Amino acid sequence: MVADVTAAALSAGNRFFQKGHAGNSMAFFYVLSYKAFMSTSEPVRPPNSFRVTITLDQGVDRMDNVLLDACRKQEDHPQLHTISRAALKQLFNDKKVMIKGQRAKSNSSLAAGTTYVDILGF
Image (cartoon, rainbow, N blue to C red; front, side):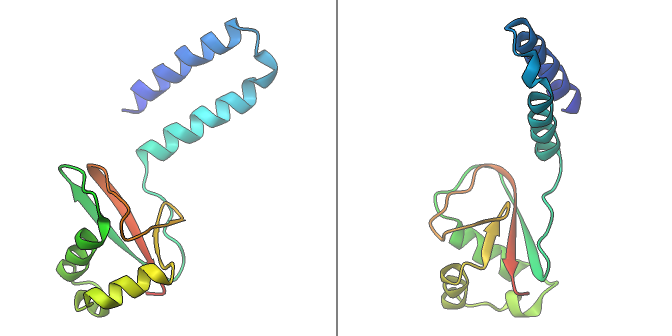
């Protein structure tokens, strides 16, 4: 995966220089490096939070039901293991559910693959 991203970055970088944008080369390199890094690693977990990792074979329209199920299945945090639907809804309303450092809404969709959901305050 990293080799594919690197090859694509080098190809894009060559096109970038051929078009005469050499003055902006460092900014372009950092953007490509950041995208390659973010696509291959787990995001940083915020302090004072609990991380729930959700892996889906296919995307879903609403994340709240999937997150509720994942919280109830995990056994690392007893308070989240027994969380009610209303309590989870309150966490969304209090902006304590985050994906990649951004607030998640209960009706946010989730794509297929792995999603790291951080619940603040746990």
